[in-house]
Amino acid sequence: MTTNEPQRASRLTVIVGCLAAIFVVVGALVYGISTESLQRQWEHLTGRASGPMTFRFFLQPAMAAVAALHDGVKDARLGRSPYFWTVLTQSGKRGERISEGLNATARIILIGIGMDLIYQLKVFGTFYPMEALLIALTLAFVPYLLLRGPVARIARVWLFPSSGGSTP
Image 1 (cartoon, rainbow, N blue to C red):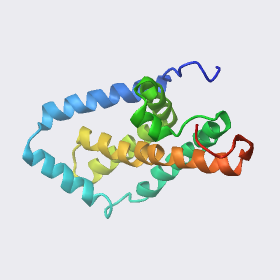
Image 2 (cartoon, one colour; image 1 turned 180 degrees about the horizontal axis):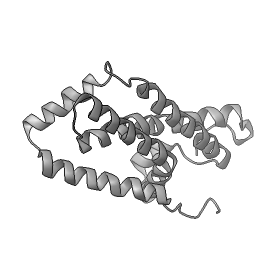
Image 3 (cartoon, one colour; image 1 turned 180 degrees about the vertical axis):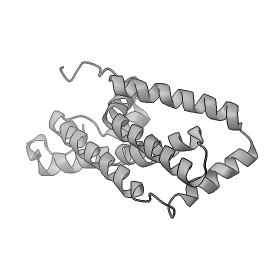
């Protein structure tokens, strides 16, 4: 695949996207969207950092950082604009770049959903699908989103100084 071709979503990315849509719909239908449910979600999310399975708060962002490192160096090699900045400012490239990020983090998101499922069943005795999706995206996609651009900038300066070290 050349760098000018839009990246197609992998099967795993499609599965994660469908699973996310299902989780949102099922979560809204079963638990509703109310002040009480939002308050419960907030309490559950803040309580996860001190309960069982806290290792995932290090594991998932570390895995996302590795993916960001790989893709950031590739961006630097190809002379592409910083990832997050492109997603924010260039609507024509936004979908393609978000698709790249989701392809890179789909496995991490899926693992995160699985770990949150185990956590919820162990701690709450039930499963809140929207909470699982939210925590998986927060621990997997957000670090990737925030790290890929800075990694590309650093790599451009250190690894590929012939490109001038500036962003296009």
